Structures are given as structure tokens and as C-alpha cells.
Image (cartoon, rainbow, N blue to C red; front, side, top):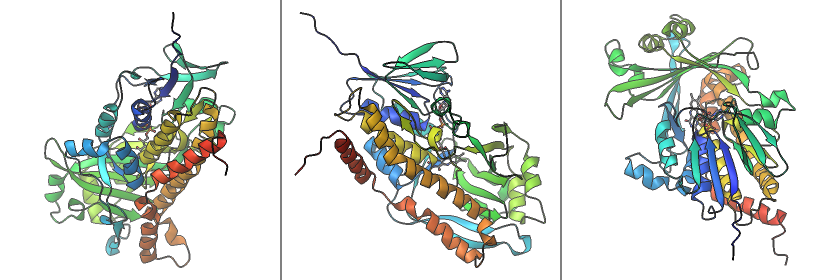
Length: 438
Ligand SMILES: Cc1cc2nc3c(=O)[nH]c(=O)nc-3n(C[C@H](O)[C@H](O)[C@H](O)COP(=O)(O)OP(=O)(O)OC[C@H]3O[C@@H](n4cnc5c(N)ncnc54)[C@H](O)[C@@H]3O)c2cc1C
């Protein structure tokens, strides 16, 4: 007697960044994942990210804990987040050189943890089960087409493949979003936020030799000015023990959001930031800090316009592909990780069939579109506060601005992921007609 083996449910993921790997981890490690085949297509030669760290706030930590991150962090000696308030950056007005002043000592609503991106990618990959999940590198997705019962995915090398569900975790310049919203170029393409971010660092010894009491040596600081700001934080390199200061300078360019800025990222000379923060207009502390800086990388910060939905039919976008935002609240990756939890759990729910995926997408939209777009708005508003834009408002002064910054960050101390999932599951049962009537 021959037995009929039903074909596996094929999930294709575009992009092996933080979001793509988090999604794959939820799919691959779920109890219900034996009938799933997960293929991750990554355009780079290997899974990699730069070494800078990301803050992990309460909700993100609640999600990562579902993947067993508590044990992973303990094993790697990584400090996990702390319940309760902790001290954060000191905010200083620095564009009034004769009168520079600390105006807010930030108390964070929750002691976040800081994870380096390579470390996060490494731990996420340990969650992938090789029986049901495979990463294909050097595979750049160009587009996809909907066929009668599947999706045809095309690659830059001329090859193609098929899947039952296609999930775009391919970042701000997403080709999956470009196809999903091909009918609306404003949504398909990212737009320039109007902000340039210059990321660099300097050796602490170079600052000590010129200014032994420099405030950047001891604590994270936000050096604020009209239309520009600098974030500095001291750190010790975990491998070499050498002491550095991370520096990110933000500048708003004339014309603002939407201006065409084609060059996405470029290595530039230190002089470029020194021209933005000049002696006489900025306090000496900033001038000293930037004089010691290594040549920075300039990023044109791009964002995605608010999308009406993240998923439709059997295709969805997650993470920066769905809601790339400015980085002023340190929450972009956290939002992608939340997308991964909800869509991952929906696609491995015991009630999932090939036919009801569009219903799962409706619930994914319901749970994630508004919260992610709220995070986008909060990040933008926080950046405006760092650039002192609110000071132009009537009745606003530095003290009130400091309080407003505190209020803007307060939601990062809130949890509730499990409660939200229960709501999603309730919605799912209702849509599938599985709710018991009294
Ligand atoms: C200065 C700065 C500080 C930040 N700080 C924080 C923080 O503290 N906390 C936080 O939560 N977030 C932070 N963020 C945001 C965070 O970095 C992003 O939200 C996050 O990295 C997005 O992850 P992603 O996987 O969605 O996209 P990406 O990281 O862009 O990954 C996309 C992946 O898809 C691949 N890819 C792209 N196109 C294709 C294609 N066509 N085919 C196949 N593969 C493709 C790429 O190679 C990449 O591997 C910060 C951002 C910046 C700029």
C-alpha cells in the first residue's frame, strides 16, 4: 500500500537580517512546524551586520524571551534588561557655547539591554532547526509573481523558485514591498527623512590627552542644538578592552523630508562633520570630540511612508521593509522582532491551512500596522526634540522640553506582548468561526 505524503507548506523569507532571522526562528522552533519548509534568501555572501549595538526595551525582551534568550545571554555574559528605572543620557544644550547647559538627566522607564547586531544574529541562528530551515546566501530577490496556487520568486542571478507564502524582511529598500505596492510608487519606494546620520568613534585616550574631564568620557550624552545633535556614549571593546566613544552626529538638510538623496551610505572625511559643528557656534566639548573622531560613515536616513497594510493574500512585509523609521527611540529592530512573533505564531497556529493564510494576514495587519506606525511617529517626534524644534513653540523652555523627552520615552517601559497575542488568537478563532457561542 502506498502512503501519500502531503507536500510541505513552503515559506520563503527574503532577507536574513534581524527581522528575517527572528521570523525564521519563530517558524522553525514552533511545536507545529513539522509540516513547514522555510527557505531564507539573503542577497549578501553571508549573514552579517555591522558591530553597533541596539537597545532592547521591555516588549522586545518579552518577545526574545519566548525564543529562550535569557539562557543565551547568561551563557554569553550579556547583561539582561532590568525591571525599573535606570539612568539614561544627559541632555545638554550645546549650540550656545558661552552658555552650554545640562537641561535633562534622563531616567529611563526600564533598564534596556544592549546587544551587538552580530551577537543578535548569531543567537537567532542557533534557533533555526536544520530539518525545516535553510539559509541561501548570494540570492538577491528581484520580484515575485502570484501564480494560481503559489508564488513565483525571481532572483537577480536569473533563477526562480516557488513558495506558498512569501515574507519580505528585506529592509528599507525592500524589493518585496516594491512589488506588493507596485500600484503606488509613494509606498513602494522609501523616502529620504531629511536627516543625515554620521556614525563614527574615537579613542578615549585621544580625548583624555586634550580634556581629561570631558563629560563624554563617563556617561552617554545627547548634545543638542538647533537643527542638529550629537549622541556620544563611552564603551569598552569586549575583545580588546580598549576604551572608545561611539559618536553619531545628526544633521537636517535644507529642503527636509522627501528631497531626493540618492547616496544611501558613504565613507566621508572628518572635515564634513567639523564643518557642521563649528567653533563659536558649538561648545568646545563638541569641537574636541569631533576633532578626535575617525572618518565617519554618512547614512541618509530613509523611511517608509505609512502603509495601509503589511500583509495581503499570501505575501507580507515585516521589519524595516514595512516601517523603517528614524532611529531616535532605538526601537526599529524591536518592532521588526514583534512583527516576527505575531506572524510566526499565526503561520504555525494549529488552525492554519493553505487556504486561510489571507485571514492570518488580516490579523497580522490588525495587530501590527498601528503599533508600528505609532513607533515611527514617536521616533520622529523624539528626533525633533533633540534638534530643539519644540523650543520654537509658545510656552516651551528647556525644562519643559526635558520633561517632554521623558514622557516620549515612557511607553518603552510597558509590556503586554502575551496579552496582545491572546487578543490576536481570539480574533483568529472568531474569524474562523471557532468561538463557542453561549
Ligand atoms: C543609527 C541607528 C541606531 C539604531 N538603534 C536601534 C536600537 O537601539 N534598537 C532598535 O531596536 N533598533 C535600532 N535601529 C533600527 C534597526 O537597526 C533596524 O530597524 C533593523 O536593523 C531592521 O532590521 P531588518 O532585518 O528589518 O532590516 P535590515 O537590517 O535592513 O536587513 C535586511 C536584510 O535583507 C537583505 N536584503 C535586502 N534586500 C534583499 C533582496 N532583494 N534579496 C535578498 N536579501 C535582501 C539585506 O542584505 C539584509 O540582510 C537603529 C538604526 C540606526 C540607523
